[in-house]
Length: 83
Image (cartoon, rainbow, N blue to C red; front, side, top):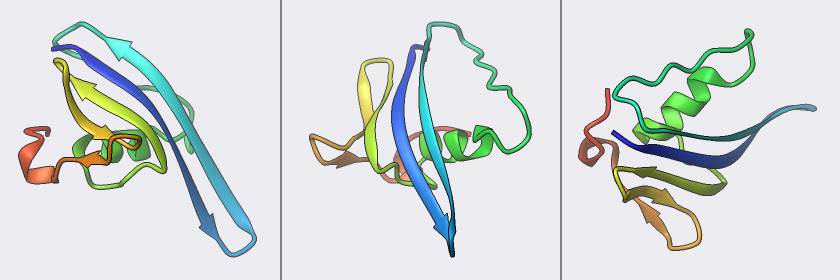
């Protein structure tokens, strides 16, 4: 499975904010996302699966766009076959 991710998402809570900028690609059947606590791993996975909508960017699996902000593509979670 080929996975391409290049997304951005800003979350705000009161005066605090978190800015996620994630860009990577993988050609392997298994992709591992790791990093420090609070670095955006779960938010990235939620964006890939469609539980969170990024503010910008693209998510492509095997050449099929699951999300593309510029082209107004955002497949529903149930159509992404991700788990």
